Figure 1 (spheres, rainbow, N blue to C red):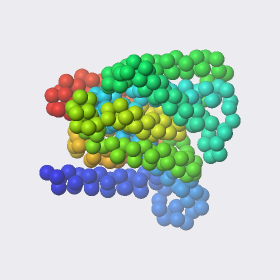
Figure 2: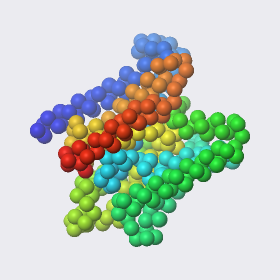
Figure 3: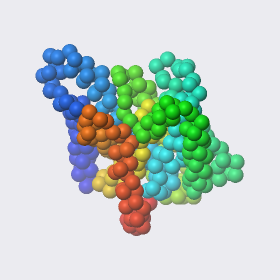
Figure 4: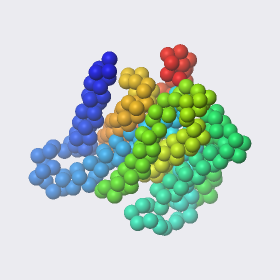
Length: 332
């Protein structure tokens, strides 16, 4: 059985590498390797546009899926995802505020909209954890409810920012909220990779404790897990990953909901394996969605967040209706 699981992981790794190799050649016009090698224009398109975009999509999809795995284990709820705690709304408001105020970039290489989105995400998670600590409740249900409140607050603030903005800024905000993998060159990839690596290291360190969190806070604490510290570190790691992704790509929903469920169903519920598996599946999923979004109606490009929402909304409803079945199977 263990050998069979490793074979599936090896096959998934090969598929991930294949997707990263072949997806950049697909677009409004199919690029051939021999043409890329000999044509300077096609070479520039490939290495400056398509390859960075594919890498960004893979990192963003993998990061969101990994965050979904962590949050669903923390809350013991298959409906939890990276934006449950208001991370998306906080990042969206931070981006909208910087657009509305027209703030100049203060960090070289980082657009002010991205910096504002990351600050908004960190503020949202700080508020959630702060509300929980004020009443000395850090259990899953209390933090989840705090996240919902913070999410509604930032959503309302964002709508107010849209209302008072001019037509140009309002259009920019709406377009950013649709999500999209739009990058040129590799500078943004290195920034995104930096935050994902830091968050992934923290999550990898806490993977054994994540398995214990599934058994319940009382049992996990009896086995030596510091519940408050572990949840604080995991929330910080999730915010770094999800916040940096939202800052770069805008809000892209449902990946953290769909992919962890598929990973648990077809691979394992052991988080030492589930984490890397979900990351690869999430990367593959978003690369496919992004490729579809820029080719189906080319030369018109559909925001990739629209595609993931069209897939994720029916899946969310189906998952909600089948939640009782998942519980009986022992997933949560």
